[in-house]
Length: 177
Image (tube, rainbow, N blue to C red; front, side, top):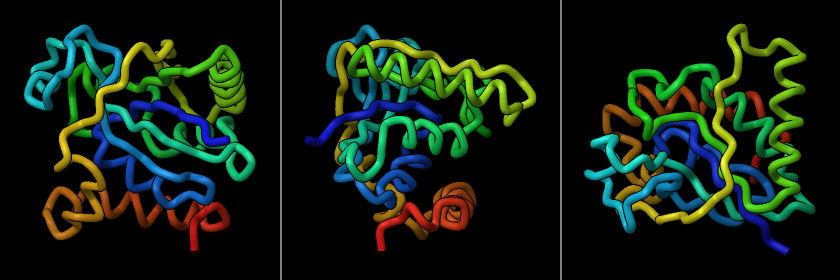
């Protein structure tokens, strides 16, 4: 049975491509969650006034990759210690966030954050928001699969491509062939 995980780790262009490469991930959809505006547009999200976060909705097979494993990877592909900021992207729409789909996901998220804190992986405290998913709004079509369709654009080459290369080295055993 396919499950869902909804995660915000900065610009969705920078993380959707990573999770697409994992064994057990069936589909990744970029979108918006956590705000008050119905059916928000990218322009509204960028204003920072809607309260939404750029997120990815991951459809995964928990018999191949678990929710816990997805979260452990999530905490290595973005900086969960910066409030409303990832790299040069600044604003509440870029906050680190986990939108859980069940009480079990809430429990697992808390345990993963506690474990990471105890391991001292990050020098600063984790500020990742953990909230129940109320609504998920898919982003506009041009945001879907962005890196794979726009790899030659400067942003993709200079910001996303190095993340992809690092990710492939770190998680070689977890990647689709």
